[in-house]
Image: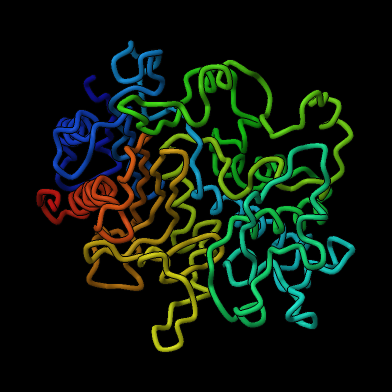
Length: 435
């Protein structure tokens, strides 16, 4: 399937972006013609400069037919196709916490026990408070249990109270060591709900998605029915066939927010009587945001200096090789702020967040020139460039690629973002770097 795209020359002075060239690169990734990638159901990609769209394109299928790769394409992948964004969601969750803190409803440095009304403590360090800042930067000493969620109507409290098995004694007190944990964001969302007196999905909509002009929503909450019907299924290649993992046809035909529930639960009645803090994993604050690549690029733009959530970009933890103060997961996590990573890829420094789950690879990034002056790229008017991508299917073993923190397709998309940004900055049209 050919790529489809939109491009705006007005957002990009200097040399124009060659949309057809970028379209061809996306089509090559989906078709398996690019040696850096693999055949994939769909790919989407967007670049923004100073908050305006420079390029947005996609290739492949959002929803494959019954025969996987051999079936008809039920819905094309487009730049406005929504998908489960995986851990890029953490950035939106942290933004919501920042917004509540600015309005005095939340204290990022207060003991979260004060919000819950019971002790949230690592039993090995009972006198050391755990704060929102610890949780949102993954230095709280929290570990993911086998299941870091609770199916409604079960309560959240037993998952985190006392010696619930979610704490690591060997890490030292909160703040001492970085270990990435999805449950951190469930605990943080509970404190946010209690502080605001609102369900988490509504906090995110009111504090982040609405103000930034995004069509996004957690677990489809707030997304239009039409956008959901055209949404992307996430796939893994199983026994030679693309097999749906999340947001299959039945899910995309539903209406209203999705959440895990025990059999027989009246979902509407449960939501009506829901009390903030009962189950903050309900709307998957760690990974359940549904968004398109334009939404994600706008989210990353909000990290730029002077933008609404620039404070989230400042690293709160940095890896120290001498003290081995964190698990970098092969170099993916070297610096972490409030829901943001700072990474270097092929000499380019980026701030934002990556995502990987259920076959998806995603990312929302801002080129961060202030912290690395030699990196690409800023134009003469100092406008920041952000970009986002999604690859909606992954073959078995693809993440064991030996290429470091990012897979080859991600590196190709990051290089395409840098190429467009360099053109906007008037630095010529150097070809994307190839591995």
